Image (cartoon, rainbow, N blue to C red; front, top):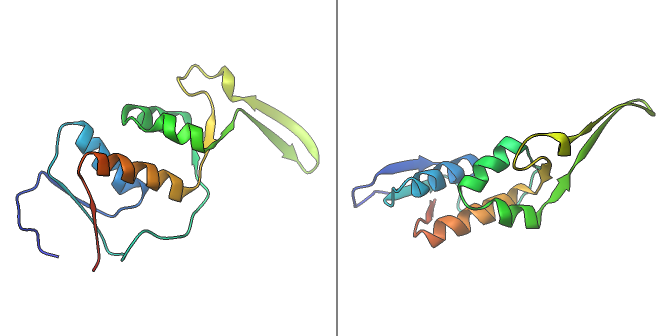
Length: 129
């Protein structure tokens, strides 16, 4: 997997962190980005993923939060239990944030959205042949 051109950055790993890092570089004006991953293709597995308000703020800056919010499930309230007894409740809507909630979205959906944004910018992932 030899590179035959000059690049601005090499991102190793095409999971959520690598794709997010690559998209951050693109949004900062870098266009010559290479993303490589040791897998032959995206994993078909999806792990549970909860995106917290600060993560959603970062994804907003990358231009993908609205798409993810439309695809995910909002959690506006969290209750804490001791056995069957509710001990406390946290209203996330009271947070002074742009996104005062937790968003639950499968990892594969997050990766799809990030990959689409990167593809729109002309940045593909080089999977292992």
